[in-house]
Image (cartoon, rainbow, N blue to C red; front, side):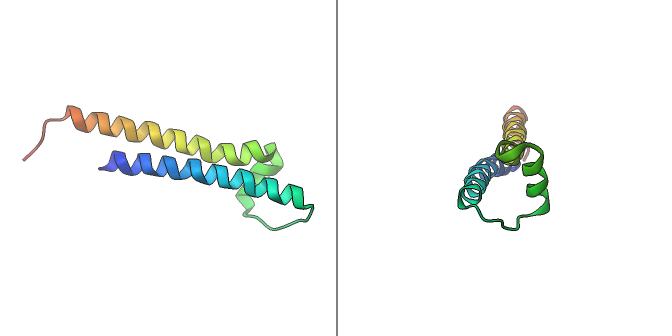
Length: 81
């Protein structure tokens, strides 16, 4: 069950990364300034939209790998009664 939660979290991170990328793009295109979370601003100032969204993609990939590993380990273990 824990593996499925990790996989779900990974998928949510991918969706968040997509939303963040397009949110930052809309801010750039509007020409106005706005306030964002300090961590998002730090990542954006460091590497632009790819770094800000890429952080969440990286977290999502790690979460997916952990989830798949946990599911594989659960299948290898014999069922305990």
